[in-house]
Length: 327
Length: 257
Image (cartoon, rainbow over all chains, first blue to last red; front, side, top):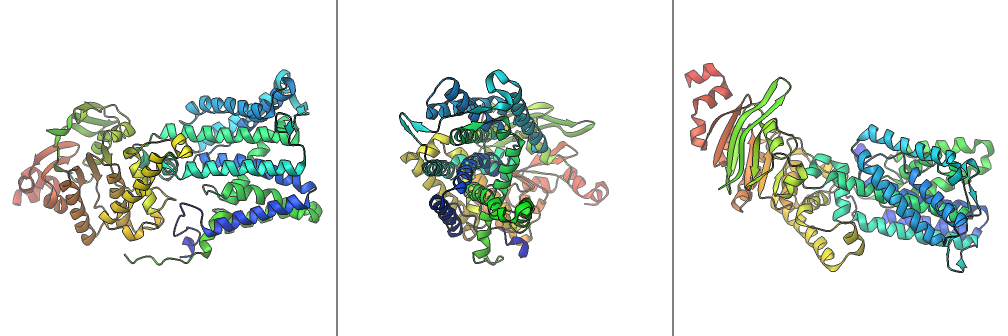
């Protein structure tokens, strides 16, 4: 029976109490940071941005069950799109964000069409290469990207003369956008389309036999993930005001994977919970000085051992177990 | 009229002739069975009909249209739905959700509909939930609707696959050894369900090596052995067919029979 403990006896179609509790805890943390202010505001801002990235990644890796180590490529498109359009061409930040998403979406479509024929490890390698290539382009194509120097002075988000300069207000706006991203994710998941995606991750043969067009569904999930990633990249540029190739490098892949797995890959709230937890944890260990990284790694390890399906799957432990065997 | 018409269907895996010039016609409304010993080529035959394997030569027509080179999902969209010998449940989804996926072909709407949720989409979602419950009741899994599908015992997983296939309102239901691994009691229950499905108007093509089950419920039986069709007829004809007895019992015993 112990092995079943982490498998929920009732895979909740909507949010159960435990998930709501986790989200509530996240909201409390958010509020506390908002009141406390200071350096943590930046940490929380980044958590919101990563949360948006992870919500998208969850479509491809969680619901559809496909590996992508290259979503940073689309964040890169978003970030540089926003930077170049705003700094060089004085575009409105909001417009630049949307235009960059368009470019990223088309790029995802064009790249995904041939790449998604691959499966498993091969797909993982191909997408990893995609991330590396994009990183190299952002370093080498200096006339467009300014190479390692990157872009500074990217204007903050805003509409017309209304700009969001205050750090607290920035955080509130990012929190709002994360909620919008979450809402979209929930709507898509609990639908005919979302069920199709999850069926593919359960059994491709089974899904195909029921008439689901596997390659098309995978491609759409990949594009959705790319759109989210691009939005996250743009938001990073507008929030921090500075980008360089390093921001969207392989490091980003590792950070977002950690978040997704800590929160619970394939769950509705996992990406949000993971982004907040994995962003704040290192800060908690800041007082331990040079042991900070070790303490962080230790906690991550413990989480992955005792909650392999992520924090949001822990709710199963608190639900009454149903005895099997009776009809 | 034949709903499914197979002509000269052949599959070669390297030097192995898995299916050799098989002809078959499944009449509309019938409960048709293909039997044969292990390794006779039954599953290969099935996989070609449902588009999971391409044939080496020969042709397949479903409802008058040539489906020989179509993809699985295109064939499924025409109303030819299969189940698998090794159950292919959607892990991580509940029993009810598995059946809801089955409604895919009987419903419509993609990303835009899911986001905007117009009234027809909401109505359709409600119908999907309802239909899943009905079908689970039909196969006797109503009480397990909210369980994780993986937690079902093996026999019930098979029934779930049947319910899931029914959800897409198939015109021809292909069942690949549905009784494999079931005990006698479970097999009886399954036989009853298959007969009920057929009586409600769905044509059923069944692969089995359990001859007992097949001779009890099938209207017509084709027998495969070493990739060839060696006989076809009513259950009573098949039971006394010398070549069939030879294939199942070996030639010597057949001589005594």
